[in-house]
Image 1 (cartoon, rainbow, N blue to C red):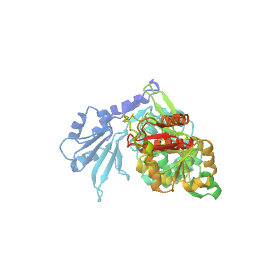
Image 2: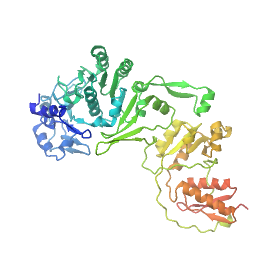
Image 3: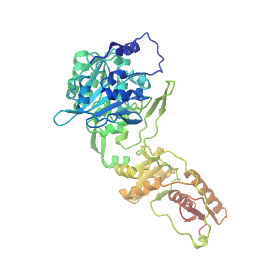
Image 4: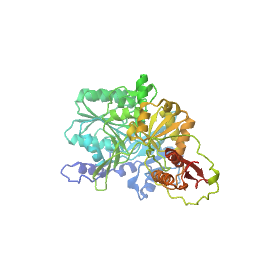
Length: 558
């Protein structure tokens, strides 16, 4: 069904070059009337009553169920009448032909219809998805797009990958580049033989069936001399191989793939080749000791196809990895990855900032960090439970717990501790930690009793620099969980830095002649640090009271 001429008018007006428009302004074109007109009449009536119709995402029609509309923040069931076969046929008659991927569209629009069939091929459900041309979405990464680098856009379904890809094609084509869009499901340039104006001067090659997308990619390069190829939803090994071939021929490649982060793609066996692929390598004994890892490790096996990976968080905010090779190498070694964060403010200005350290588990629990402990080590032994007789009757002050301040994730340097076991423990305990590659950046060196006894070079250096070293009895999940649980326990009272400063002041007072000094109540993990600080001053210490008012007493040994 061809839409009325007036339905296409807004697109032509928006694409006119002589129409001035501020660079920061986003213009959204969706032509909702075209998709609403394909729905059964009783659904149209109910749908037009929605106050936020302009925010509509999808309309779902399933046989024998109520029609459902989906908005960004809510789902709404329409009417009290269930969808019938006649309702589904009404929609089918008003849209284009369903392809092998069970997708169809409305000519000259960006809307998409997806069918659900039963085992005999009969349509029993239809998802009507609103397609929008949003001008200005690519501004946040426009410098990268115009740099000529190969760019991969990542994001969950519905976050706006295809919308941004469409805008990329328009900007590059209007910049004088020869751009070809490989449009598998007609989602980028719309249904019908005439491409949607949202892709600018870019040319569109349609794909007869999704299984032939990789062949059309190669055909585009061989037959049409493009400078840029734009592809949506790469998901097979053949497409990954075709992308590598295109990149090796000097053609700029811009594509999308499903996945929230670059790390998701590295772990995807089908698409990891887009980032260079992953292989197992065996290290020498000396190299394994130097890295503090096992002899069998994962390494990147080839240069990545894409130079830049953009993790789309929203239309206004992205996380950008400008050096994919370096990022993948860092991830495979189990180290911390920092992405560049970019976002648009309300006035359309682009802001760039170094990303936060990658937290292995995003936890809503408070996060804590460690301070260097002047080379002293502490182990997972139990804290002393009883005080000497001289202090057994000392009163326990009832101090009201102060709110705990949220601190950055704990930065761990692993020496002889299995990364996979630590990750498993983090997922189970909800601790917020990051793994760093540089000993200088670590808050805590985590090692085992066996490795600590051998005193490797890294441990000797850490002790000389005053780094805190936590010694596990064994490299087992049980002992790792004990360590991580100590990080996630509720912290009340002062911060760790203040608690250690208080303990150091108390030790100086005892050294100056006071018989004993009672510290503020702290969590068990902080009390353990305070005990070791007392040991450094060759003083005695014990804990007294019950949680949450248990505290450390520092005194002169008899």
